[in-house]
Amino acid sequence: MLTLSYIKENPDEVIRRLKIKHFDAAEPIARIIELDKQRRAAQTKYDSQGATLKKLAASIGALMKEGKREEAEEAKKQVAALKAEGKQFEEQLAEAEEQIRHILLDIPNVPCDAVPEGDGAADNIVEKTGGVMPELPADALPHWELAKKYNLIDFELGVKITGAGFPVYRGKGARLQRALIQFFLDEAVKAGYEEIQPPYVVNEASGIGTGQLPDKEGQMYHCNLDNLYLIPTAEVPVTNLYRDVILEQKDLPRKNCAYSACFRREAGSYGKDVRGLNRLHQFDKVEIVRIEKPENSYAALEEMKDHVQGLLEKLELPWHILRLCGGDMSFTSAITFDFEVWSAAQQRWLEVSSVSNFESYQANRMKCRYRTDDRKTALVHTLNGSALALPRIVAALLENNQTPEGIRIPKALQPYTGFDIIS
Image 1 (cartoon, rainbow, N blue to C red):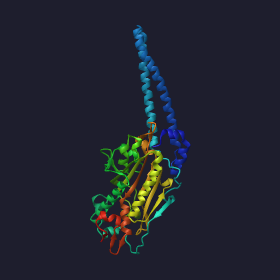
Image 2 (cartoon, rainbow, N blue to C red):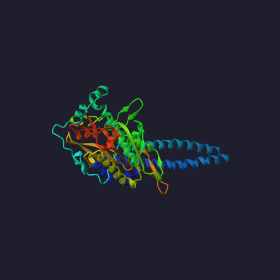
Image 3 (cartoon, rainbow, N blue to C red):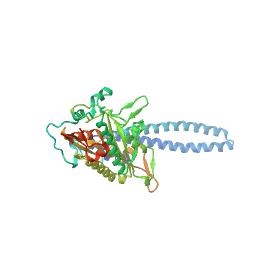
């Protein structure tokens, strides 16, 4: 969340920048500033009363020694009254602080200056394009037909077992999934990321820490009895490794990668654009996470983009990079770049990765800091990216590499699959 000090020092800037995300911050910012005035007034009274209380308490012993029992008893009564009044001030302080916190949790991160204005996906900016567009015959099959033809993925069986959006991978389809996971993890480890195997469920504090909670869009699967949440991405447990942690400067950056299953309700998803693997409720993904000093975070963001681009090039997929406009960004992000691959049979671009810098927004929610040169503490910057999400990668691989003989496997994957063609 945004820091109270930043909002107080830059209220007009916060309101202006959040308009890029189509969020009207004027009322909540005004409310926060008013509550902070009330909090500071209560704090001043509490501190003044505390000083008086301390003097009175100190005087009681002296009065008793001097035999001034009545005066001492009167002082005791005043101390008791001041303590009761002090408790009221404490309650006022706690109430104001809690109200401020709740409002702050509902205010999005401000976009950085490089974020373009826009209403939605149509206003995103294509920054870079690469790869060779495949030329397929007119009768080329979409991936869901290829999956059925070669017995790779059973969507109907997934519906029987669980419901729509939970496919069953089998045979070479399952092996392709496993190969991609291992390939992505190996590439991340080569790039200096420490591998983590995280839990797939998290507590409420973890969801709040990375900004998935409060869940305004109803995307999280909630285990009501235990008040736990299925993770929508490994970003949540991996970033929360650093919740309530003070890091030494010499230990930065922290670079982690993790494979996990991901669970998203995707409420309201329907239609041809979500057919097959295009949108699932459960899917596999390898995530990269970085904890950085603020002055290094944007260089780290470029490194992460280069890493994802390298993966797509090794998979021989046509790709482009989008700089997301304010209207298409997530609640927590300061800037996001989406990677999309070309789905030749569907004739459309499919998102396979989002790489984001959250600056200090998540760090403030998680209370993750580092020690500066003068041994004070400051908030870190957090970043993460998909490297990569599997479903649409599999969709593009199947569609783009179909031949009369079968589906060709890219050379970089062949050591992991153990086969060079699906036939």
